[in-house]
Image 1 (cartoon, helix red, strand yellow):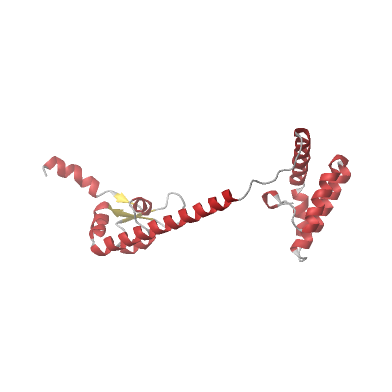
Image 2: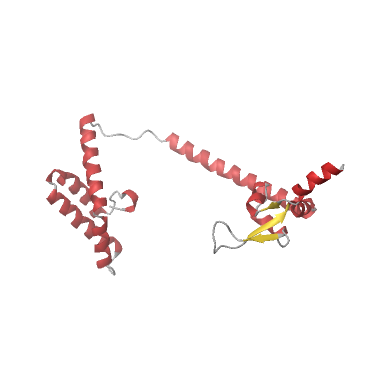
Length: 193
């Protein structure tokens, strides 16, 4: 190695690596046990209260990676990673096969106008229910200590009755939704209603 090559190689070997960069090199959480104390630490730039960022010189990492015990652990980790990927792929393939083996769902025979009418009713009711979320939350807060499902059903029914009274053209949709609430299987978009 001539003097120019030695000068250009020195900064590369003193380059500092983070844990994230080590993961990109193929390290796993189990392999971090081989790391010595960090060559440097710096404040966490992403979280002031977070732990300091530990930095390791590339030279230090290369020394660790050259150890036989590390190489064996790395090979074992690669085998585990490969087996996990294979198991995940197998589960995914089985799931897709199970889905594909099922017949297509039977869709209701609705005309375009009827489907659009129902969609508008559903969307309108959903909009009103979301607008009434603060009211619902206030009632939930007021009725603490009661069975959660019972409380939720009673509140949902009150709200749906109020909507049906204020918007008679939504009566049938509110009645359908109340029947679902009473059975305990109301569709609950985003965890509500």
